[in-house]
Figure 1 (cartoon, one colour):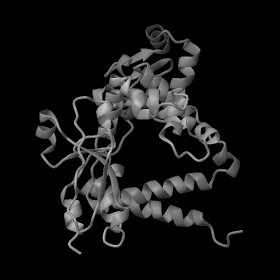
Figure 2 (cartoon, one colour):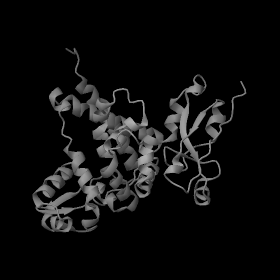
Figure 3 (spheres, rainbow, N blue to C red):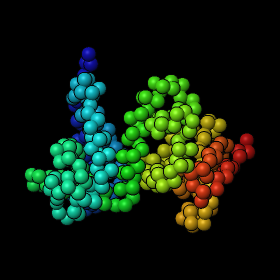
Figure 4 (cartoon, rainbow, N blue to C red):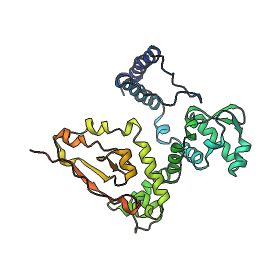
Amino acid sequence: MASTSRIPELSATIAANTAVLDDYLKTYNAPQPSFDVNGHASLIYPPDIDAAKEAIEEATQELNELVQSPRALLMGSANIFAARAFIFKFDIGELVQADGSISYEDLATSTGVNQGALEALLRLAIAHRIFAEPIAGRVAHSAASNFLREPSIATAGKAFADDYFPTSATIARALFEHPQANEPTQAAAAVLNCAGGKKSLYEILADHPQRAKVIRDTISLWKQLPGFSWNHLVIGFDWVVSPSAACAWMLEVDTEEQRSQSGPNSAICGGSYKIWPPALPATHQCRTKLISTSWSMISSSLSPRLLKAPQSSS
């Protein structure tokens, strides 16, 4: 048994870093974080304040998990994922007025979904700060759900509902059926889509170009999030010691429209657009292995070509 309690340490970390963040917000008269529908949509902080924010997030998560029982951690509810998928699938964000509210009954009528099931899913979401119930029986937007009114978020939501959530839930099944997982046709997405071991995800998406476009646009949206920043690749990988291990799946942008948006040296990575910093290999004087994957089978508007990084002189 631990001789000292971790709880006071986490509490002190939360208090100290919360003070740093709060002082910054007050000093610069910055918008306060809020769950309210009019809460500030995008809070971007300088590096030192962002580090304090991350410390708060990590400590609060650990403290929350620490005070729960091991059984609770192991058997946590997955129903929130079902609630989110339902919200995305049925465009609930569009059905709820931007500056008003709507009854569960009217939502059930609009969606054609059983009212009891709809209420159960939405009230679970509301408990997680997605939507609000300002008056009993009526649903209004929260800061989080208000984002659903943005077309790019709504599109990403459909990808989550139709592809990402179901695929994640199929990973265990795919590994049970194919323990070695050494073929693209054995991946969870292929298993989920009943490819029968004959098609990879890319081949499946080749038959559904609109679905492929939604997934591509969603990946492009992801890259705007701090967790997907190229900075993590730049500062988190030892480019000098292990250059041969540096790999990226890329396609050169080969349409006039994308070149105008991305510049001549940009690339598609993981199906997304304009996210490769060409100065990276040269800056670190390393050889970077770039592997082209055939996205052309999905999008005929793109012509894949291998991008060659600068070779080290050593």
